[in-house]
Length: 236
Image 1: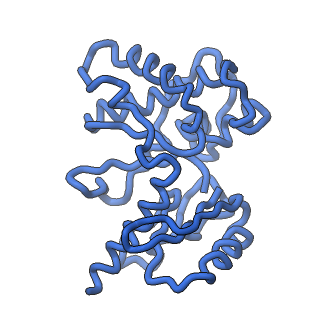
Image 2 (image 1 turned 135 degrees about the vertical axis):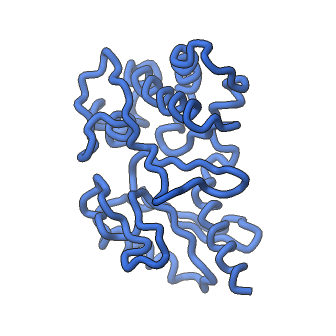
């Protein structure tokens, strides 16, 4: 799904809508119609990658080798994305992190081949919404809470938290997005994470360390509003 929203200088959301992510042409037509209703000062955009983040590049802001083929060389999707913030800024180097494509161990009861066109059974290929839908043959929100799929899903999400913990040692790991609306998964994630760590490092209590967004449904929208506000402030 693509989410579009309008907010004010105080980052309060005035209106928000969602559209299915189909082709760039169909999706962006809907987005443009929505925004044309408002007098805009600036727009902040959040989207999947890999993306060209170098401002002096001829392809700055364009998506490159995404598994979502129709969106290659465009600028706006569905998958697993991640970022790390240190002292108020995103960590990046030659590009932005692509942590959603980290390699994960396959669950012993999972025969699904993976849905990532580049890596098959990376984190996104095994645990993103489309992977759940292909494995279950129905939408994630239609899968019962006691279905074994959620144990498999928690196994992969816990690996993402484990890899992130040993790589960055963050103060907190926040899991958001559509799949993470399945709040019943979090005890399973905590359990699998504990098994993986096996006492090697001491983290904060897991109920405070591996959590959902405090902003509930709004982090992406408010984040984009904050980006737009920040760019406006640079002009004045």
